[in-house]
Length: 230
Length: 225
Image 1 (cartoon, rainbow over the protein chains, first blue to last red):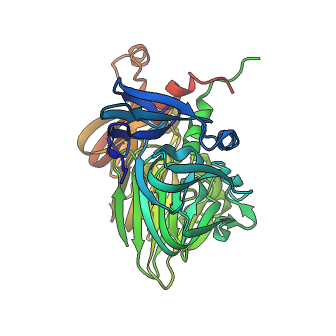
Image 2 (image 1 turned 180 degrees about the vertical axis):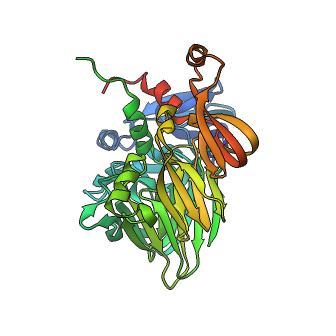
Image 3 (image 1 turned 30 degrees about the vertical axis):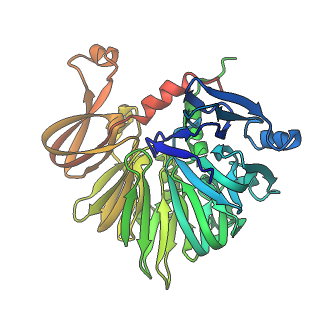
């Protein structure tokens, strides 16, 4: 097997991914996420799966390019850090699919294909992402979160606030809905700052959630911005 | 009901396992994930602070207008709750002593606990941080959220805490707003401004970081609104 040796350090608050490549082994990394590496590692930008897919990735909030790092001739290390503080989770794909929240991609084996999938307006009101990445193939995948990642084995049905979904196996079906009990006399609490839109998962499979959301944090900071002087 | 706080102190998230026929009240928006059969109701009503007016008061307090009530029904259920900012969650067991909670510090409580807005008088206006405090009374569990880690101080006598670092304190403590230094000019130039002085005997819960100070530091670097 061509698995990549790795460790995830300083999780869950400041997780960073430590990849240990064998001689001539390659890895795909989110563009700009490389923090440090050995000098004999060669970096190559690439648009995975052709230009159109790359543009699709750009639309999904993910950078257009992923970088390919190769340990030329001898083993070497690459340290990868996601843009936001949080956790990293590893998943080994074995011919199956994994859906990952669009900003969650960190790194993957070159044998793994990353596709953006337009989710229709399914996820539109989450304020988070209209797009999910669909990852297929065989090999390693690492994805990240804001806050800690928790794994939930779903069997039957499970409800998650849309903003907290990180990734899930494609054996799970989902639909986005307004949770009835979260509205009050016709008032949608989702608009008034409560939860409202949730993903209802059904089936059997693994689901990963994050313990924080980026948007409420940004909303917290917003009132502290200076006001424009007229 | 079994409560586990995971990933403390920076990314704390509460996993609550509920037995059949149990109930949990949480700040609207605190729900991260849950069993699909949990019955959810979002309400303005809660204790004496219930009704529309209570809701408005809660909104003024920086607390969201709504509280969500989760009921397990006939089956056991699980639910995850998390605060908005990075930091810890503190479970506090209520018995006979009332607990005063800084308005953004409330996350959830069991049904035996009434949460209402407690106006602490004019003195709290001058604290510059938050005018409103919530008072929790009754018996049961309260989950509090903090910005940063939480530490507890057993006050016996007097103790001083910067207003931005208070999470909650037992009602057996009196507090007054005072200046940190000996002179008013020195208090402001020193950057400490106003502090809370506690008197009496009781438990006091503090957060390691001050959300207001953090917001001002980052906010001033952002483009104007």
